[in-house]
Amino acid sequence: MPRIKSAIKRVDVAERNRERNRSWKSAVRTARNKVEESLKKADKTTLAGSLNEAFSTIDRAVAKGVLHKNTAARRKARLVMNVRKSAG
Image (cartoon, rainbow, N blue to C red; front, side, top):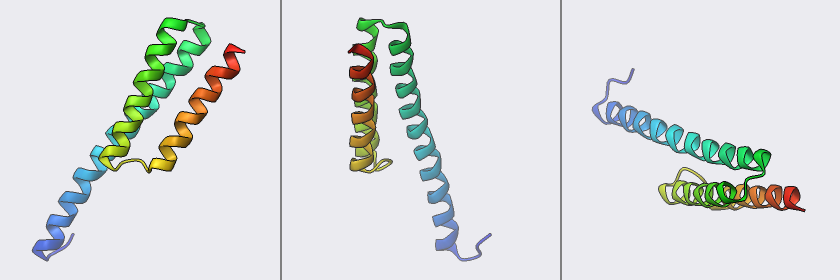
């Protein structure tokens, strides 16, 4: 453990940020899984809602600084690709 006051504060901040990042990344994974479940059930109404929710969650994670914008774009593109592949 650090002895210097500023280093102690940085440890606290790093832990707080780590918890926040874990929470957002978990939310992104959950949203992705909901889209995949809707694809398996072939339910169009829940698919549209879950896809919108996933996009919203991913965009909010970018706004919070948890995900990079290119990572978010890649994840959204893969979701749409899977939806189109299963529809066609």
